[in-house]
Amino acid sequence: MLNLQTIHKPKTLDHALRLAREPDTALMAGGTSLLAEKRREARAVIDLSALELSFIETRGDAVVIGATTTLTSIVDSELLRGIADGIVSQAARQSHANILRNQASAAGTILAAPDGIFSVALSALDARLIIATLRDSRVEFADVSLADFFAERATRLQNSIVTAITLPASARPRRAQIETVARTPRDKAIVSVCAALEIERGIARAGALALGGVAETAWRARDAEREILNHGLTDDVIQRAALAAASALNPRGDFRGSAEYRIAMARVLTARVLRKLSGVA
Ligand SMILES: Cc1cc2nc3c(=O)[nH]c(=O)nc-3n(C[C@H](O)[C@H](O)[C@H](O)COP(=O)(O)OP(=O)(O)OC[C@H]3O[C@@H](n4cnc5c(N)ncnc54)[C@H](O)[C@@H]3O)c2cc1C
Image 1 (tube, helix red, strand yellow):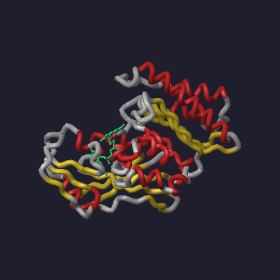
Image 2 (cartoon, helix red, strand yellow):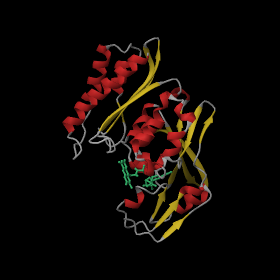
Image 3 (cartoon, protein in one colour):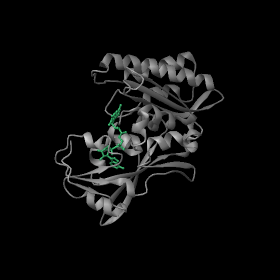
């Protein structure tokens, strides 16, 4: 638990970032994960809810989701349901039960569960994060891919705030499928796999395959993607891609599932999402 004594509610990003420089402070979106964190040093929280970062909108060809947008708004968004078979809305719905979805935010969910199903769906759509930082007393914004963010996340977020998640134009024409395996329907997925592919006359022309529950963060199966892209989704291609996805893994086992089980499920679920996508081609 936090050793909470003060709650700040800044109205500007500039103010929030200045507060974030203070020692012993923590950023709070929905607070559902933060308040359970064992950070006794954290005496003050910076509530992000007055920063007007709750929105889902089109900017050019991209779709932008504000950092504090709740998972419920994402589930209900007509705009998001119209992109890549609505996979982002589906992943938001599968992430948590109803009550938690009303509170949990988009960015908070990525940060609290970087290997969770929501992060996996966003990775498969090549999502990017907009990150605000104070430099020489001015607010600067960096636009980084989710994959780069995950690789550098320990240092990336120092004195910074995620302000938005961007789905690039390339996400729009993709067909997408997500598959998970869990102990119960409401439990955290042991393994999840999402494929989001642009399929033209049966050939996968562009896209990505992402897995969760097999590494610290959502993991892009680049070798498997190479097996798929510019090929038809035949049984042979699907089996090679599933094997490539599973062969590259070195997951940690836990009480939900052993390392061996995770590798086996990665192969099964990868084949399953690709087989489903071969049916829509
Ligand atoms: C009953 C219950 C059940 C839960 N079950 C699950 C589960 O099954 N699976 C699961 O993965 N999680 C679970 N959680 C954890 C948690 O609810 C989720 O991970 C939730 O999605 C976090 O979102 P949030 O907006 O509440 O994040 P917060 O708690 O507000 O923040 C999470 C972290 O991200 C940081 N942060 C938040 N927003 C920003 C931002 N914009 N910029 C920079 N840093 C930021 C915070 O400082 C904090 O470290 C559960 C929690 C509860 C209370």
